[in-house]
Image (cartoon, rainbow, N blue to C red; front, side, top):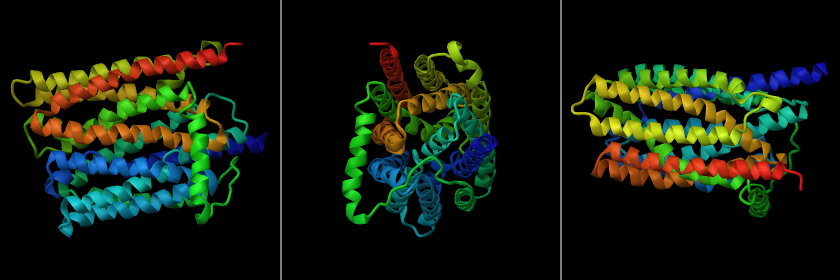
Length: 428
């Protein structure tokens, strides 16, 4: 019993620490990425969205093969490959404008970056759930995911502020520091992560295609063919149309509303506040969801969150349409709504991860999670160039308005998933 308790504490501690450090590294560039591509790289907003779309398409192609890696040779191996690839691709981003490689250079770096993220997609969460199950952890896992997101929120807050400060000095500095911190994540995984509760299998290159097909088929069976999980995947696709675009378009949008393109520091502050609000929401997940007979239906919580997200996104678009002139008032209103968006996401994120993992068997967990991410990538790969073109040809606020409509479409899907889950629990 003592060994089990120690293992649970160590697993959760490692998960929380890794989430915090990784998000700290990743978020260093989040507040300035679009500005870096436009100013240092010389790209238009449409080209920026096209580069981001190439990144997303790369993720789509790599999701299943890298999920196979995690489901065969292990979650730890997949995480190590992720950190090494992400550090390398981050340096590629810095070198692209130095070498004058322009759009093509950023496109290639984005493909490699996408590969790095897909090695991590599903692997970290699959490792956590497997290790907790093997340790006899019986409590709802959405609380653990909430703690992980709280750590991510702290990392994002710190990274966003630091990234904004470093970006004000030199737009390439956040990328360099990010690469160093990702190397630190590599060391954490190497020392503290072990494939506890997961039985590894050898993966031979000669059998990779066969193994990929077998695991993909199992992923489809427990994912796409699951009446509970399939609506969640469609929600990932429809939400992905806006979420990736909105995250990157937010940076130039708020500067346009302010009327000061040099206020890079404000992007860091806004992103840090976004993180702080998310941390507060993460802390409320356990209280909101409840326990035992009083536990709330996660699908209903996700449906309500989707409606709230849609209203907020449309509201942010409305600020742009209603603004008579740039200044602190429209920028402040948009930031306030952006923070409300962060509060909702801080609740829905861990609830969704806990709900999804409840309906996936261990042996296919990483692949099904990757398949869910694949659907989100598919939506993002379509949404970023299309909404980016709308931004260039018309306005960013019109693109946000369209995006809000797509977010609203996810709410009925969560309701559908919940009704199917309820039907499965009903005695036949």
